[in-house]
Amino acid sequence: MNFLIKILISSLAVIVTSYVLPGVYVSTFFVAVVIAVLLSLLNVTIKPLLIIFTIPLTILSLGLFLLVINAIIILMASSMIPGFDVDGFWWALLFSLVLSLTNSLLSDLSKRSDQK
Image (cartoon, rainbow, N blue to C red; front, side):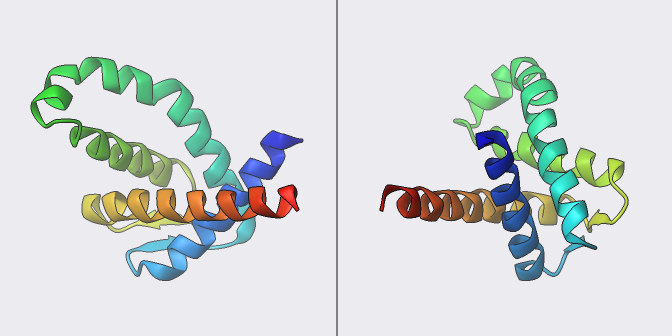
């Protein structure tokens, strides 16, 4: 049940982020749910491998290369899901930053409503 709530919050964050950024297009809410599920799967499977392979670059850039890895993950999801289009690398990078902020804000709001 908790996983389902996190997926729905992430889906809402994807929709909000796609409305904010003109370089990102999400066709429906169902596509946003699929994006949230696929991004969580890619973050669990592919992202750790990319981090291990790029440890020297990550150390050299003081961790900023992790933002590039996030953008690569989003571009991979964009190529896999019809109805989700990202115009390029820089939009993917900006999408990952705004999505992280939006997701954390929505998660924080849902935790506050649970405590009351």
